[in-house]
Image 1 (cartoon, helix red, strand yellow):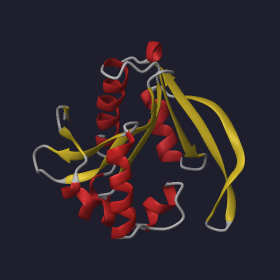
Image 2 (cartoon, helix red, strand yellow):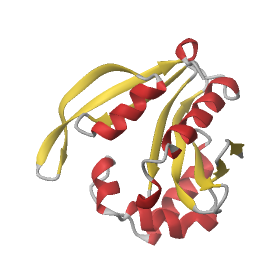
Image 3 (cartoon, helix red, strand yellow):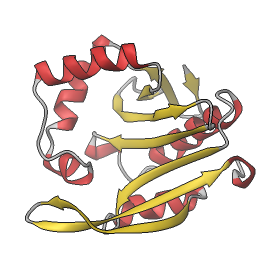
Image 4 (cartoon, helix red, strand yellow):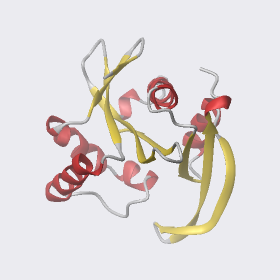
Length: 174
């Protein structure tokens, strides 16, 4: 478990499946992720079992301290201990909780954990280039653009550019 001033980041467990299913089936969440559709309960449970066995992924549920409300997830996947790198991902599923700085707060806790506890040297991400709100968050966190995969993913009837960004441990300021 990780803790910030306003948030608790709790390791994902079976009790979180109802929230995750609700969030992952929202159109705006589907549109921001690299998936093409929502998920079923069976698909989530299969993913969760794979997650438990993988050993190369850590996922947290973001909980607002003062209300106990679950609002999203943040995690590291494709953790490569040999090369000291991992892929970052976040989404806030509760629309009413967006725009309050929770994404940045949760991300700072996770990135610090990745660099200081997991001994990572590099954390990277992929994001749709036109997802301005996410790109702004990532730049505010200190991520740098590494490149654009032009017309890389077919989504909502068109090919979209994907931006690759990263931050190195010695660049991390928090």
